[in-house]
Image 1 (cartoon, helix red, strand yellow):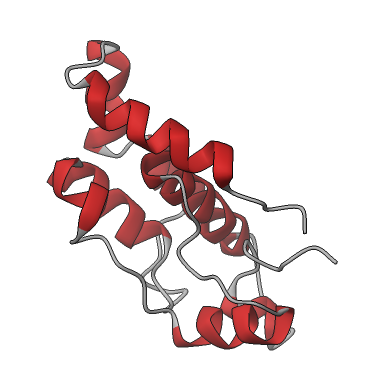
Image 2 (cartoon, rainbow, N blue to C red):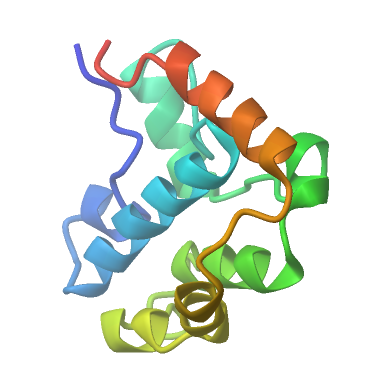
Length: 126
């Protein structure tokens, strides 16, 4: 069975709008930056409970090597309060996205190699 890693808390409550897609994109960005999902568990119920609690870590481990701007973007996309959460347009106009497009070079390949290794071990489709 697939784990519901990408589901927004408001979707669980069946009261949602297009910002639930920003949440899902934030989960994907989180995974791309560190190689593991922000909300995980051994069962769908455990994952859903963690999604509803909306507590995620962007301070330890590999996150120490991630820029503050990237962390802020993830936080704004994974904001549990839908009114405060970024819209798709706001996310695309975020300074980290804008500067990343301009830079487009890897400054610390070791960090990205570690994230890639984590991604290889991630079993999202269980």
